[in-house]
Length: 180
Image (cartoon, rainbow, N blue to C red; front, top):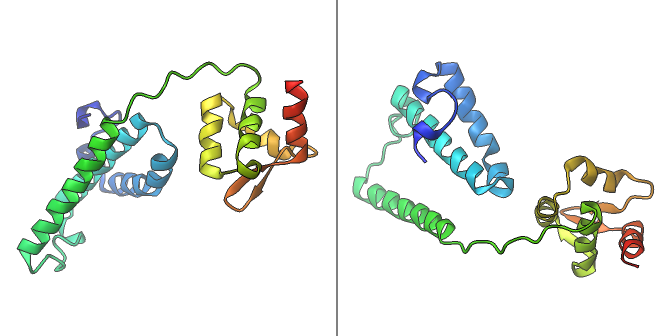
């Protein structure tokens, strides 16, 4: 993906205020994109963030460690540290590219909410980490509003316990009620 593939205005055309706002937003959303975004979103986000950073350094080199007196004193040691960092990034990207194609997902038969609850119920102690639960919801095609209803019904079918999402007796009853 090249800079020319990124929709939106090139970083060179942004005002200083826009550049700073977009750079701040890119860094603020990085964790979400890493955990929840698709591969395409992650690639797009990485490319755009790097474009914004390069432009910021070009315009304001003295506002970053490179020009602020924080420049490395031991240039060889710093160069080696950067080489190791670049190698690690290349290894991470190579690992992403070499991931096997995911198995063809069989279409979800039935109500996505019930399929979702069934998978939560099948997990140890009927609980999944919130990130795993989020991924399951995406895989079964459960929309956000439908997911929220599982927590907000009376009685709730799911509850939160810190970082975990736990099926309740009402949720188990729904799963059992649809499988008989």
